[in-house]
Image (tube, rainbow, N blue to C red; front, side, top):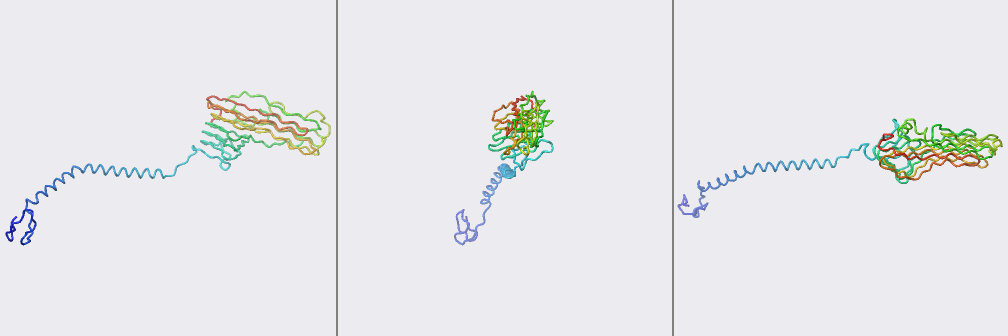
Length: 348
């Protein structure tokens, strides 16, 4: 390259004159390769740009999916009545419709029922827990698993001295024992006859109140001075009556003790039942020193009504209240195990 100022010859690649330092202006031939390179880069970018758009869209979608998943996991879980309910004495109340409906029920502490309990799922009574039914029923659409104890409870209808115990004429529970009178042993209560169970019969008893069909009768009150003891309450068979032996000999007490209460019955239903420990025993009258005692209460009836899931037996106590001084014992209750098949007697 010839310097235009001093005519000194320089290399073609020189940007300044080696003699006078004049800066050389690039010629058209020198700039053409740069423009061609820029054109090539532009063509390449146009070819790549659609793929860059796709990558950008995918990145945005991934970020959005991450945010949705994060907030969904951190959101509070909604609860409903279909979940397992831990039932304690502070939760159960007397239901207005006669039945407390829940999904699954688990009893974790002692409780006395104030209404019938119906579960569309399972009912579990944990080990060491006592559920007192007080004439109410437990009905499970799934398994009724009693690992603790179910007690029937007692009506508390003790007969005053020389009066008859409370009767339940339609019941299959035990009748009451007669109160002590005249220094001779009074008559004990009797076991009622058996019923012919069916879904229709059970449904009818449920609608009419199981108390009327499954409760044991009360014991009669003991005699007051110079009087006879009261008769025991009756059920479907004649109950205990005052013994005729020595009935007119004055009692040695100055005021007879009351008769004892019978036991409520229990109705338990489940597709499968693990019976566990169940008690529906009549009470025993208190005995005072030198006094005749009231009669013992009758035992109640326990019905296990199970479906296709099967039945696992347990231990049961349906005894009548024992005799005390000169009184009669209460009649025993009964335990009925009824396979209802595929049709529910009572819908939970």
